Amino acid sequence: MAERAADGDRVAVLQRLALSTLRCWGMEARDIHLLKMRENAVFKVVDACGDAFAMRVHRQGYHTDDALRSELQWIVALRGAGIDVPVPVPARDGRFFVTAQVDGLHAPHQVDLFEWMDGRSLGTSEGGLRSDLGDVAKTYRAVGGLAARLHNQASKWVLPDGFRRHSWDADGLVGEWPFWGQFWELEALTRGERDLLIRARDRVRRELRALAGEADLGRNFGLIHADLVPENLLQSVHGQLRPIDFDDAGFGWHLFDLATALYFVQEDPRYEEVKANLITGYRAHRDLPDAMLDKLPMFIAARGFTYLGWAHTRPTTTEGLEILPYVIRLACRRAELLLSRP
Image (cartoon, rainbow, N blue to C red; front, side):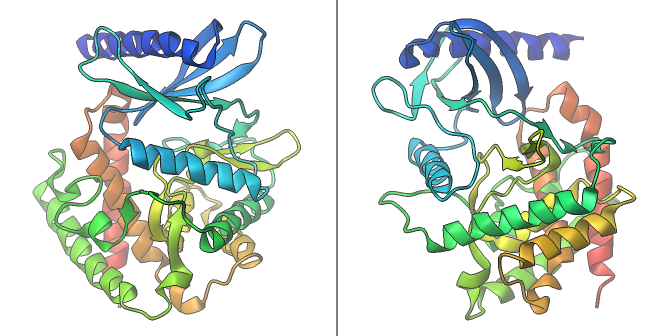
């Protein structure tokens, strides 16, 4: 109960911060409530006119100001390319985010605001796909097509001066200090699980470094969303898909986006149908050679490592503690499957 109370206290402090920064946008809130709190706290804000917005209060220290500015620049560019992504709302002084602090926080936090996007998520990371999702094949052909369109835009886009984002490359995934932490040091792992993950890590490290040395790296590596999990894919009433939450976006292999889209669907009985249609949808818009696609199991294993690293380096919420055994089980299963491959 003490941990739940602590979580509640933190939400209250972050909500006060969210309310206090609304003046930077010249707004007053009729209603504000928390939507989710993982890396960031995301609030739904309804202003005095009844218009809805999504406000992110960022985890302190996750992104530099340059990195956050770069994320928002890419989102604006994607919208300009006709991809239906959340639109950042500039503050009154033209900035796309502000930094602010209130009592109860030890440091300023970055805060940004987006126009509200209607739609239902395809599911959740811990719960899988919605039971009433409908035509799964059609939906995941659209997910694949969406991923390809993101990669196509990024491949042609000239990065603005000062553009900075992290990398989901070999070092970022399986180096000595991965971007989300040394996953093999997660305290909840048994000795056997740790040994398994280290062997799988070494296999992934060798394969990724070989990929990085290939001449056509630029065709397979670039800016990616890096979090196309079911809860970050909104489906409108007309079935249109909209990606949200670009907080993890960075430079990585395009196949890492597809691995992420599949990761929390892998125990669904429709998984093979989902995978086949995801790939078909992607190939309808962008080339994906069979030799590259053969690396998909390796990228799925690497995706599992990152979730363990996240749990190892982040203050764990009550929700995180509850799903940790599930995340460990998925990661170890994927490590075993990878090591069983020739």
